Image (cartoon, rainbow, N blue to C red; front, top):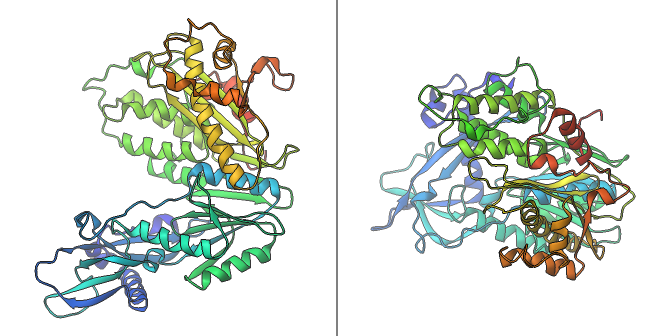
Length: 530
């Protein structure tokens, strides 16, 4: 059944009156049976004076890689916002792997020519036992007498502590099976083996396993299956809406969001739109737009920008500066801002198969190449500068950021220095993460900078007077230079980096199409056939 053929109900009443009511009833029945098998709750008489929280039914569809419906899903969700801290919940924090960690994991596995397997822990949150006493109303589909409620024994989706309970539960299993959680990101676990390190990436109930030997993945599956109901999904193809196209034998991996972009084109009526080659109009200043009633729009601007941000943060650094600028007008957008957002979507239409390309290289495994750049005073409204940071491993970007600086820089050197501070933070995190994964870092990680004055300030070679007003916190760069954690390189001085190839340049400002296209390809953005 095609993706657009089924409407997902927003509540129980809609599900019961929809054309697919029979399928939704079956999904509800399956969900309740799972709770009975799991002994998620006890049906008890409501104790006097006890707060009882509500619930809601959440419905969803599962699709295959072609967009066809494969499963109708129903889930009972507790209304955790009705809980009271210190009474029926305490700890709420649960770590999941960051997008940057997932990209690093994929880049390293590609370099090592590892197998990348994917697993799903079914009804993950139900595996954790609650320490607090929580009472919930009886869900639809359960027939009991008056005055009865559910006393929850197991964690349930929607509870404040659900994520924390699950994370504690599965973390304990990882430790028992010989894995150690990385301090840099506790969503990544590592175990040593005779074939090399084994990695597990955890994102709620999704698991990615990277290992040299397929039998190692089988052993991990068996260990997890002793504690949870594990579904093996085979070679990783999708994670968090991102498609993984991996040629294991050739050591090439492409990470893209083509299906999500296609869905955006449908949602915003751009399937037949003519693509553009540049997401921005070079030289256009969206800050100079004066919003008036005639320009106020009726279109879902916030939804559009939110979707674009998801793509930008996942796999498309080439639209980072566009989304960074457009997200500044969420409260009071104009028709011009809307058209600018649609232009970005038209650009994605023409580059729908583009994504992050990782591949085997001749460099030592885990080698980081960093770029730092700034656009001095580029924001015409505030005169604040924009920092651009790009970090590459295995030939592709693992970290890419376009961020407006928090204060006004008084010179290009100061703007570049502030951008360098952000780059240094990211480098130090990456170095620690990779060391925990088992890849000792070179004495210094190179950061390419195109401003000699900023390099002079960072290496204590510049004039004191030009830097005396700079926030002391930014001078931590000097500490890392002195300790040889980072080595600052002036871009034009390197024979292997052409003078016009400051790869982070496109993250700081809009560029003419030829320069924009060249830099995005250089940074590691490619399509299926590149």
